[in-house]
Image (cartoon, rainbow, N blue to C red; front, side):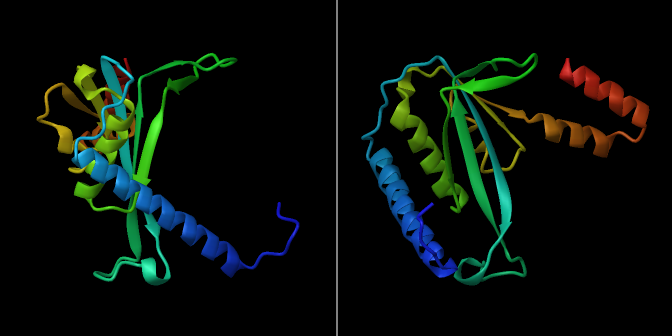
Length: 181
């Protein structure tokens, strides 16, 4: 793409610089949110949110210092207003007006970044209901208790819970079908 030979180290250095800039932007966004300087102009009655973590093996200075694990959790959150049929597909859907945030942050910091990402785009006073979809980790459910916030377990984790708790495999399939309906 550059018509030049780039070493692995050069690519790594560029990625590190970009990562540092993105982290600084996240910190500034979080600070503006904490100061109450965000109130987006988009108004919706309902907002859908999904969150999950991905455990990634780390190398070098990014490897966790404590414990035996060489992994860190990348937290991800997506917000969207709904979904619509995907063109040319019978059963496919695409989410509408999607925003996302991600980072290797502790739970509290990531929650503030996630909230800041929503407040940057949406008028928070107009959102009547937020549906949070996830695997049930405490950092995902941390908004529960706030007015209009509801949590639902995602389909994968519903299926897994059924498999783990029901020994009769015939009943497992029946239960899965009932949940899908």
